[in-house]
Length: 333
Image (tube, rainbow, N blue to C red; front, side, top):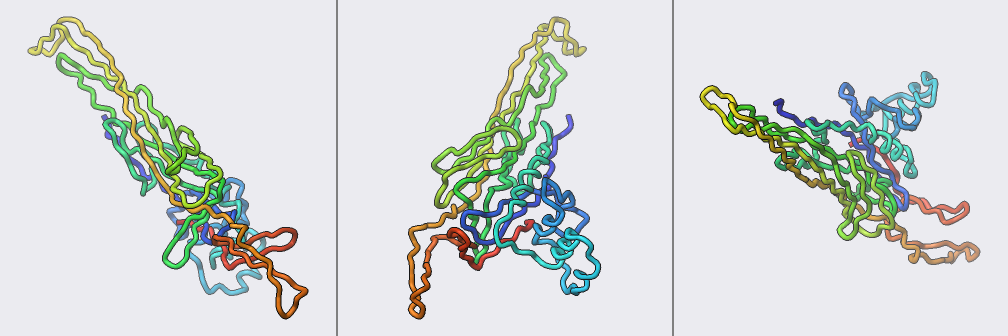
């Protein structure tokens, strides 16, 4: 039989960097353009992301520096063309997380094409699990959304909201034993059925959601504090093993001179694979604020707050808004 081989799935993740309060940006999956020196995928814009916003999402592309202002004033005929040229010369920050990253996540996830029973299509860094028959089984978290990765000094922290979703993929292949078609006892193997039976999202304390199949969107609610989000996928394979035994076998001429008796059994195997992301739930502690007055102008009042988390902006009602120093980027990694 032909030896199955595993094929690596080329996945490009789009992550947002910056600080967040309740809103953050997620992770997106895209196919990179192998003929390009940039991180911008060749299959966009798509999934409802418009032509103007799309080039601004890929901040780790190869920038062309020292462009003159004439290149932006004299030869640009449309907003998408301006965005493409701007994104090609610098990384563009956003004041707040944008919905386009999550829109790209959910759309591009549906393009994942599993490899079938003889091939496991997996990301390069996936942790592969093997059983006797099931090989190269894995699950990979490709997005936690909404979320953002904050880079500060030499540390990086993923912040998530209390409510959100985890997007995951899973795949495997099945090693079918070789047939033995000689002698008085003969064996024939085939696949009866296989499946990704369960895909479960859990923390160290709770099971949050469950699904099945190669693509999963798993929801979580009312999380707080630091969490390890773990996706656990269980793969099941059921094989058909036919054993034929000759009641009177002539080994000299290699022929059955009696009758063949047939016995069939169904060996079954399960393999479990996991993937995890550590995250911190970003929540404002509204008990940390107090009203203050100004000595040089008693008619004005202010507020001092200690939100208890990194933040980019806080809406306090009406037209009042507090702005922090953090900004957001989305980038392919």
